[in-house]
Structure formats: structure tokens, C-alpha cells
Image 1 (spheres, rainbow, N blue to C red):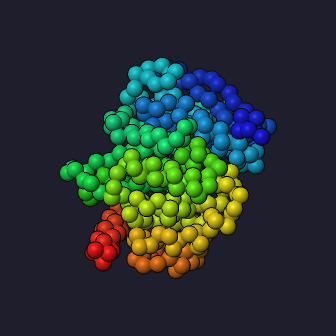
Image 2: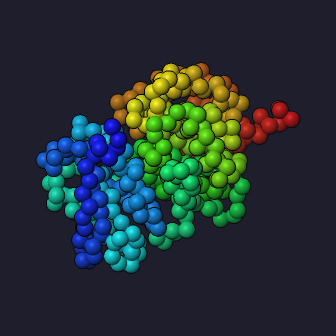
Image 3: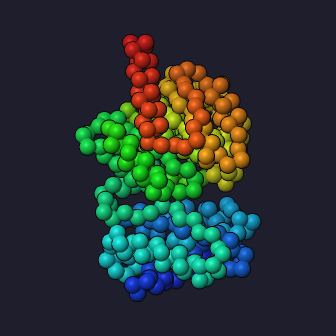
Amino acid sequence: MSDRSATAEEVFGILTDDELALEATLVRPAGLTDQEIRLVQLWVPKYPLTRSSLLPAARREAAGAGTSSRAVNLVFDLRGSGESDGVPSDEGFEIDVGSAREWAKERFGSQVAIRQLGFPDLGEADRLAALPLRSGVMAELYRYDPDKESETRVLYFSGYTGFGRDDDALCRAIAQGGYTVYGGNPMRYLLMAAPLTLETLWEDGAELADQIGRPLYLIARAFAAGPGLAMAVGVQSINGVIVTGPAQEGLAALDLFSQENPARLMLTRQIKKLAPRPSVFLWNSDEATNLLPGGLRRIYDLGEKPHLWGVVSQITAPILLNALDWLLTAAQQEETREG
């Protein structure tokens, strides 16, 4: 069954608080009624991209989740982009997002939950890096430059629930620490690329690394730790990796990862390929909810040095900068031994 046959769509206009018309598309699992909806996922384009860049991912999300999720996906063009009225502005974009939220509450009731996936940013629109990986698949990332030019790159994957203001602040702080940072939500890529085999993930990762440049270090947050580690083990141009949450659980989505050979997706079988590149495993107890660190610790224990384990209650910029410093030092020591 195709994604389109498993979903239903509506195209309509949202009237903003300052009386502009935003062109919008609502994507839902086929058969899910308004009365059954409990969650609205608000997909916000990264300006100057439009809803057309998000619809393939929103459709696959709706098709994969099915009616049991009780979730719908709202995608819209920001003012002054796509088919929406108005002139782009940061203040206007905030009104757009607020108006979309109000529309959802009016349509589905005040008790519906709203999850915002991403945010626009006109003020630094030149930070958007839309990197094509192959036909129909791209990585949407924000770029953060340090005060002084840096050759060391950091690829930052937020958790699956979206790249938010906290992620933005962390990426800015890492850049201020002297790194060129590319940050984004990996879910958009995963939905466009699915169903992924390890080989395809590695090919896409290698292409992404080539476009970003080296040396390159990967930070993968929360459930993104799974695809982050899976990518790193097979992409030699990733020089080191930091993961901050459940890993194997992040590869459990059947609609995202090919199940032709599920045993190959077991990170306990793949982790040895990461060495001698260094790795840092940080169990973030604040984000883990009811999960225990044993699964991530087992992956760590089966890996090889140089690697580092830690448990923290919160991920902060100083913690990530210290972990990056450790990665760089470990990588340099390994190069010296090989030399």
C-alpha cells in the first residue's frame, strides 16, 4: 500500500491574527476522524523552504503511524513563501505559528495536544543548509559559525520530537566554543529516506559528511542516538561520536528501517566497527523517562577504546563542549600512535 492510499489530505487556508491567508495541508491516516484526533503535529518549514519540502515526510509519518496514533500532521507555507500571503519577517512568522496553533484548537478542540516540529528563522536565513543526498532525499540543517573560522565540524541531531529552541541554543553555544555546527532534526531525513538499510544509511551519511567537510564529529540526542551510532559505524569520515540517550530503541520504528535482516540493525553487533575512532556515551536520565541505561551501557561495553561513559541529569553546552574536547584529544592521540 502506498503512502498516499494510506493517508487523507485537506488543502485549505489559515487566517492569521493579522488577517493574512496561509496555504496549508492537513495530512492524516486514512479513516481517522476529527473526533478521534488527540495530537496535532505542526511541521514548520525552515525559511526559505516551503511546505513542499515537508509533505513527503508528513505523509510517510501519517501512513506509518496509522489511526492508532490519533495524530494528524499540519503543514503550511509561512507568510511570503510558497502560496501564502504577506511579507516574510521573524515577528510575522511567530504570528503564523500561533495562528496555526489556534486553528488546530478551534478545529479539534481545546484539549488536543500540539507538537511543534521545527521553527523558522528569517533573521539568519543564510544559516539554512538544504543538502541533497540523492533523488528525493535531503538533509535540512541550520549552520552555526564560530567567531573565528574553524575547520572542525559538528553534526548535531536533535531528538525525534523536533529541533527546538533548546537545541538552537546548544548549537549556538557549541559554535561559540570554536566549532562550525550543522544542526537539525534527523526525523525529516529518516521519513524521506525510509525504509532504510544500513548500506543506504551509510551511503547517505558519507554524502552528507562530504558536503559538510572534515574533521567531523557527530552528536546524536535522545532516540536519535540509534541512527546516529548506526551511521557513524559505517561512515569513516565521521571522526568521533557523542550519544546522549537510548540507542537501540531509536532503530525500532518498522516503517523507518528495513526489516529484511533485522539482526544487522543490532548495535551490539555493529559497535566494534567504530573503533579506533573515539566515542562518548552519556545517559541523560532527565530525558530517558521510564527507560534504564542498561541497553546503552551494553553497547558501550561491547565497543572498544577509546570510549567514555557517563550519566548526567541534563545535557548542557559545557558538558557537550567537554565531550568534544575529549574526542579531539583522543583522536589526536590515536593519530599519533598510528603515525
